[in-house]
Length: 589
Image (cartoon, rainbow, N blue to C red; front, side, top):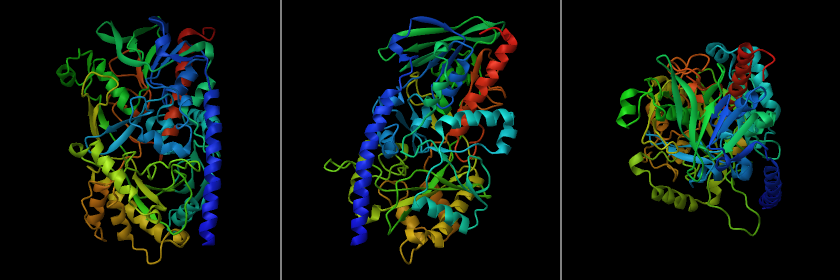
């Protein structure tokens, strides 16, 4: 009884503190007001720039900030500002953003043809505004394979980290996950590090000690205010092209504001000037197709004039499959996202997230619907509903079922595994001509047998962590791992599993992987190096057009890509400025 009273008192103090912290965060959010940031309705009908960047996301913001030092840059973002939405900047309201399916939400829900619910960003700062916040660099082997300069890469990472990355303080659940990984042989103990090295580590976070999110939009503080125009709620309709002999050349863009008004931005004359796509793994291939670059037959079927037949656009789409095990706990667990990772040698990453009380609320107010934050029906996680069954009514039934679960059953957390790579790939195609609508995308989860093998190995590793002495505080006596699998699979939010029982049979674990697969928002591909762009990210067969974002990746870097996507924006910005100096001379601006 005393223990329960202490827990209740602690939760009350935590809730009140969180409420006042959110008030402070909202004030901080309102205080950020870049002088160069305006609504697209205020954009001139026609304007000229050295660089036009489509997408103010995880790569676009650091890229624009860097290029503005010596150039005139236009940055076009289809969403609003993260500083106008207090939920974006608060860890406690992480799931609220993902659950918001309104037309103005910072998160735009989409469902892959695999039946997995996912989200794409619609806000300045991109995916760094809606993700779980883990910050870790790519491995040295990845850097070598893609041909980046290691010294410049390190400098670019540090430029980013000075603004957005922090060392998290581990609570009891995260500390137990860390000790459990070490006890079960995920060695060595690498302590806190941004580096991607085998073993167990504490990674960085874009959430600071007060739970405030820092995003790629914060990197715009590096901008030269006189060198950049940023327009919000600017939906690019298409890229404009001219010709240089028989070769298409990007000349500018047409974009529309929130009231439907059309605006045109052209490139200034000059050999170094370019249009750059940084619209993400869905947005960049989609925009290329809408502008006439892609598989010719597909474009013609939609009435799009073909500028260049480039079959690789939309190919190589991948999403790192994630599967999670829910662990009911006899002890309270802290609210946390991803802080600890076990980088195994068999190609699976083990991480933990905890806390059923994801939506704390001030005393006396109506509590929000109960959910598990990133693992909830409201956000679409665990709701692996086939497209034909994907209805608001199905999600509403899952939310109602969740409301009937006893409080004690909702006390606990998740340990998850996600697959390195992955090797399974799919494709993306247009549904229509609306640039703000979601394209059709299939990731083909577990189509490659190695991905399935790694998932099964990861689930087995999770069992060892849960059974470890280090984790005993968070498991009930006589814990049975197959029962945990069945509880997870039978959760009200999973409508695909179908009630199959999981035992020790590896084939049953394979089926568990397939039936409970989720996203962790690491989708990539669609404009891959070698298929759509060269190693300098120039679009093949086109002049003055590049793609710089995660759509160019052939594999997801490190355990989480956001640090590397931000780094890439800075890295390529520095490289482009050096190239510009060679063309124009050091005295030119």
